Structures are given as C-alpha cells and as structure tokens.
Length: 123
Image (cartoon, rainbow, N blue to C red):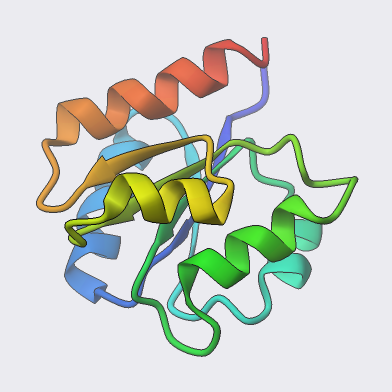
C-alpha cells in the first residue's frame, strides 16, 4: 500500500518541523510549503490526499489559496483542513471552502484525528 500524502502550507518553520516529524513517524509522506501562491503547481506535482492550510501564509493567504484549489475541478475533492490562530476560524474556514479546521495552538491528537478521518473516507 502506498503512503498517504499530506501537503502542509504554513510559514511557521517550527510548526512545519513538528507536524512533519509526527506525520512521517505515523507513516505518511509529507511535503511542505511556506508560501501558497503556487498551490496548483504543488498539488499537481505532489498529488496529496489531504492538505493542511494556514491562514496567515505569504503571497495570497490561506483563504485565496484554498478557493483557488477548490475552483479547480480536478482538485476540488481534496480535503483541506484549515489551521489558524484566528478567532474567526469558523468563518474563515467557510469562506475558504475548507472541509474542516483546527485552531492553533492545536492539540496534535486532534490534528492527527482530523487528518485520519479524511484519509479513511478515501479508502
């Protein structure tokens, strides 16, 4: 069975390192990006099973990047989990058309659970 792929967009290097280690230890293949303007190219190359998207990410931001992804018929079904420290996370996730959200600072178990939930639905 091939490894499930997670694409993470976040400009916080510490969060990227921690999440990458956790998910790689759990057998996932992880790719990271500190900018979101090239989301379509990244998704085309990596073909992720799930995407974690930060709101405050350079260039176009999480909402615009997620909207761009969801407007592509080919990629619209890839689950996007919105991850942000913003108080309006529910509204932002809706605006972005994200499939789910996790508030920062997040509990790693919660994040892993959400990712697992979306990956199980694809089996």
